[in-house]
Amino acid sequence: MLSKVRMHSSIFLLAALFSLLAGASWAGVTPAKADTGPNGGNDDDVSIQVVAPITVGAGWASSVAIPPAFFFGAGAVPFFADDSFTFATAVPVAVRVTDDFCMGDVFRIYANAVAQGTTNAVVSEFPACTGEIGPDDAYVDPGFSSGCFPLAAGAYTITIEVIQLWDPTQGGRGYIRVDEGPCNTISLAPPTATNELGTPGQTHTVTATVADALFPDVLIEGVDVDFEITAGPNDGETDSGATDADGEVDFTYVAIQGLAGLGTDTIEACFTDTADNEVCDTATKAWVDTTPPVARCIETTNPAGKTTPPAGSTTLPGSQGGQNEDGFYQLLARDLVDPDPEIFVADGGSSFVAGPFSSGDKVKITQAPGATPGSKPMAGVIVAHITLKGDAIVYAVDAAGNVSARVVCLVPPPPK
Image (cartoon, rainbow, N blue to C red; front, side, top):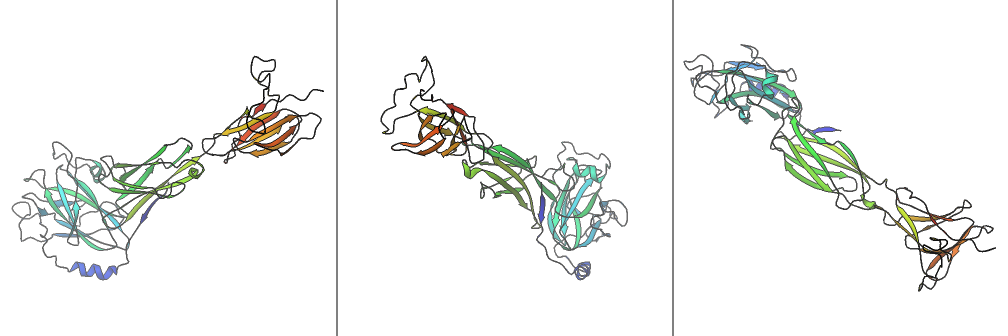
């Protein structure tokens, strides 16, 4: 199964941007608060205390002043955490932030003074200060607020605004990390599948699951996923839908029947994140025909096509029930996929094979042990006169090469 990320980004002059950002003034953004004020560092005239550089791909970052987390004081929300973080990247990245120590704290994340979104609402019914459990565990624990925010290539300063506290009389801590690639990935299940074609109305369903790229147990709800069959007999089928609480959304399509429906479909599912990264996965579905056709022969009319000659002992309880002395037979075959399987008449007394014939063709079969086997056209509705040494063995072959069971069309040899 192939998962791919189509990155839409440009190369930035990172050093120049980085220096510009260091001296930039952000209009309209509340400055971060330090832990020095009477209410835990929430005085409006206190600026950012710590600026910590982040190494992309190095895991959870540490504050320069007090490792290993960013800290924030108590007081009335909203206010900014004590630490801001800087980094530069030539490729798209994912910024992950998680609360730790006290459940119930929620953050809004800014990149270069532009809000990127908020961490998720806390699921716990009774948020509490349980103590630090570590960022990996906190990120996947629904009791702690966390989130991932995709960014394109560039130079960034990340600030974290506290918008909800579990207890306004206490502060807290959290973690941040920056990794290359998208926040989330998508996977299709089943990645491969094979089905026998030939049942009108039959369908195939794939399920797309969107999950965090680093923490696959974190399933992402509300992602719009586009589905398309990009190759195969059902090429061009499309649909879309949003992931549910389990991060899943289904795509179901009805298979084309007949010979045109044989082959392998390539199914693609994609979503685009807020940094314009297109994230996709593909699956395949093979529609095959391994079921053989069914062949048979029945008594039929004379060359004029008007009457079926009386055979005398054709049907039971005659002395040779099931035998057609006149030798006029209609050849029939049916197949679940191929509308016109080929029919052959083999000689049970030699290697000769007549055909191919189409289903519905009428033939005259003569059994002559001393004759040379052969087939020649015949007048009227009878398409061929087949002469055989032994019994007539009829079978059919479909377009996929499946061969039917053989049936014997009995014709007695002429009397000596």
